[in-house]
Image (cartoon, rainbow, N blue to C red; front, side, top):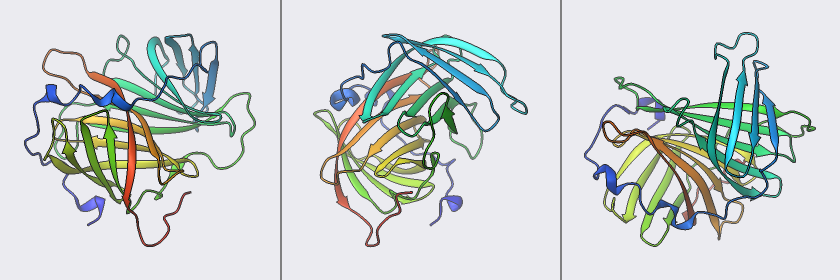
Length: 274
């Protein structure tokens, strides 16, 4: 079944919302110390200029739209997390909690190749046929760096893979990456044990063996952005953030998570890594 034929508006009963958050950070990686003092500016296809100035705990950001970009001028300051994924490759994420509370940002910065990928997670009003969480993908070039290789782009590298992810001491999830638009998840252990579904996903390639996986759940609306590090099939690693609406009257939920993975199945043909 292709992703285009699935009905993402259907819902099933899920676990209580407050059972979904605690414990996801049990396998979070050590935070990176490489970002404080850095100013990162990247441009996108509209020639819009996005600036980020990092200190030890917060990032000051600004957006200057280029010609033809409908996005307004914007700026703000947010707390952030950052992780060193590989040499010269950093993942950082933050929530516009005070400025645009229904928006969270994940940045993947490849300082060796000069490329960036911004993933904008948003919470939208309930709309028939759509999940309440959406993603926008913005590849860019980091100013002042020589670019080499291809910019981040959609990939089929994960297709057919079945992985069991462990987050902390009690949470285990099985993922099957079905096609370019969907993945199936099943909770094997933890508060959501026994629950599962097929949800939307999008995958971008950053480097061989390293992908950005963005998923959009519908029962409890959650947008997750994950660095899926599959370079070593015997020691998979993930870094990510989850974002979504909370209970009525509460601010949106945004939290960091991490996991270690076991590859328990893969396609008979070699998946593309591009």
